Image (cartoon, rainbow, N blue to C red):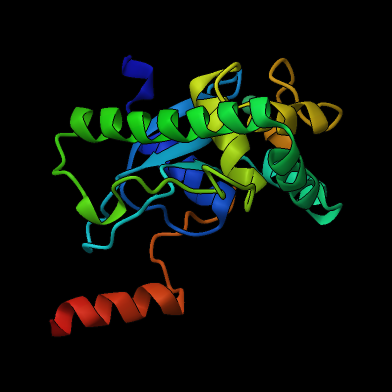
Length: 199
Ligand SMILES: [Zn+2]
């Protein structure tokens, strides 16, 4: 689908949403009803060579903030506990992990990128056994649609009063007039760049 291909406008919107330049975004798997990105799909290997298992990254500030509030209320521990006790839920959570890996492969092939052996079988967010990041699960749910990740779908239900697909909060969710961040100055990235230059 062509509306998954990121435009420069999409990349600028992502950078403004996150307050830092985005890198290696290969698809926009979910959009607001107005067209702005909700989730960015990142290449499984960054252009600096680093393997990157978190394929689906939730970027929309309204949703990330609402999910953070759920995390602060202890939802992840509660979900992880249920995975220990509910075999049916645990099975669907493991299937969601498999879907995550399949989607990464589809995205990799569509972007004509080489396989990334370092993250083979490794997804994100606590899959396949736990819940370590609700943002990952909600991003996955938005990217692939409902019915794939039961706990990602549940995360969307939990934030329904703050964000729902039929409502656009983009106008107030981030500063659209801000200067677009063009250089990632995080120490982590600077160090990685330094290492790749030295190497
Ligand atoms: Zn919108």
